[in-house]
Length: 168
Ligand SMILES: [Zn+2]
Image: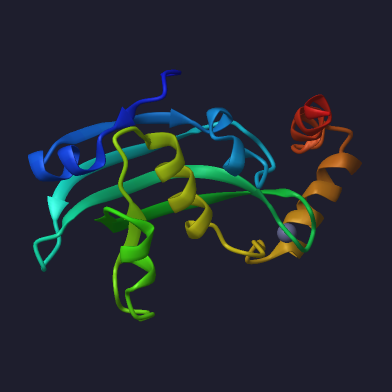
């Protein structure tokens, strides 16, 4: 799916609309830059709703497997991302700024007539990614890779290195 759906925020929320699909990772430029590979896709569900105070809101759920780069051994590592957030719409930036800072209050987002779904997905994905991803055990993976090379077989990472090189 390569189109870029735009939603009318308040209309989507008050109508209780629903949209779902899969978004290729390579078409999420801000997220792509944080990854070791742009393979894969993210499944999303966007629903219009009202929060417990009756305010028009968007609920965005995401699920997919992204390929991050381990910050310890620098090899790729799969990361299962799952996110489910309610974004309470605001008519103006002033409305958002007037709200007292509170860690427990829901996220606010400025509503528009043409809100790009892609940006909502990117924002939520970036928040869901670990700041410094690491394998649970790098040493095991490295030892395994060394063994494979001694056997004269192709390193399981050889193909991935090729992909990284192709990006430049
Ligand atoms: Zn590692």
